[in-house]
Image (tube, rainbow, N blue to C red; front, side, top):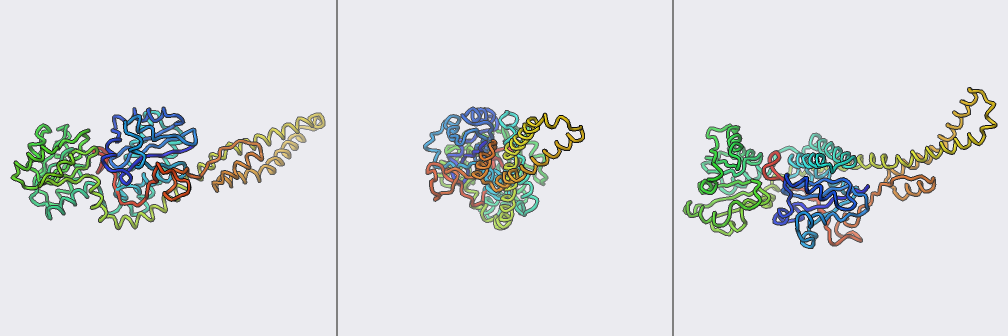
Length: 466
């Protein structure tokens, strides 16, 4: 079995490209079935958030062209996507998955949303029937490693989320949020957290709307405030928006809900008083054309990275410890996998030794026929012991080669003893090597690893949505 992982994230692809291949929760089962039907794919998982779309597969072939999935399912031209793709195999795929689950690959290192999002992706793949023993073991190990990283290092300290970063940006824009009217469009966890941060910063009136009005009402009722948020009917979205100084939007709408003509109307009603839109949805809720209007300022999720960087010094120090912990967990997983993979060879060697012992006992059956039961048992024990002693060195050699990841030596030992074993190749393919490595694949880029990023997905997980 080979592990293959391919995808794009916030560092390799702009938001305009990411939103074209984003896969919604409702579409995920169909996408998983499409991916599993690709030649060579036996098990698969898809993680789709605001900041990444990644395909993980257990394959029966050495190389499987997973990038074909994006063309087939998303209808995107492969040539346009290929420069933004990163790809890993085997050990590198395991390492990337562990780091992703531990939020070391996120826009904001240490944010808690990505672990929940990977768990949700795993649950959907399980329910769809695209996860088997290989990915089950891999994902459970990744979850355990991520939990250790959060509990044993300070990676999750000094809470930083897309919600808090968005509010911090609004505060910097106005200097103070006191007396400002804020409009939250979308009543998911992200909006709720943003609202709590805004109240802490002294915001004045807070308006809330959602396609499901009951959901907006429940959120408003759950917020302890001297001036509870006002729930706006979604049909009055644009009328209410003109009253707001700051609009924070995070819906799951497939197309922009605020367009240039809306911005022009807002400015007219506000007598050209400025408005600030913080768009944390993917696909985006605010048409980028609105940013061209004098008096309208739009920030999307990629813009928030600049603000997030100022909050990351403490977490960056903790991330060093977390990286070491995750690396150790990856090696532990690989050692367990190598032990599992070498087991068939050891069993085959033991079986071969037992067959030889029994053949010799049968060959000397006539000469042993006069032995008593006690004497016969002694001969059985003696021959068993001799075979075990004889097999001990080659079995230890097989285990040692597996522990060290020496696939060439493992294959040679299996050939020498005429047994079949699964060697667990450690070498990453050309497409998984960093730029500059000899023989690299120029069409698929290696995912760089500086870590100052954050996961979100509109109206799902705690604090964020992709």
